[in-house]
Image 1 (cartoon, helix red, strand yellow):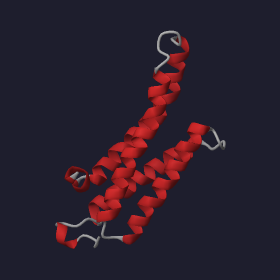
Image 2 (cartoon, helix red, strand yellow):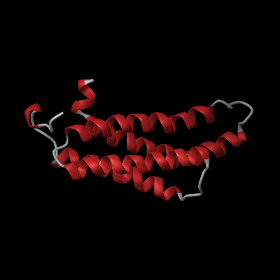
Image 3 (tube, one colour):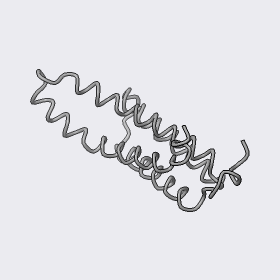
Image 4 (cartoon, one colour):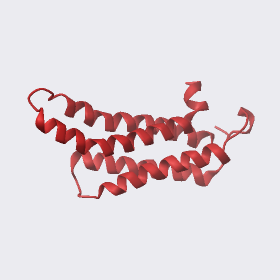
Length: 133
């Protein structure tokens, strides 16, 4: 668990970049799957599950980063952007509202940049300066 706490911003950026790659590659997978539907029917389940897996990793990273940041604005930004990204991904999965994919990319990018900002400017150098529990 110490690994998540120490490198939560790096995990967050990695999860968000993987999420964006996943979203960018999805149309190509579906085109490929349409040609080979009789052979690879389980790909769709795995690909959909990947959305929620990356979202869970992102939650852990946001939670740990928000807990250790020294800037309250960054803390609230991390949480708010993650909630927006979660809504967009869940909305896409259940097809509740028709929203442009660009919103999901924007939310994932913003969350990544917020993690990077937090990593560079808002972290404690040692455990004594962290926000009280």
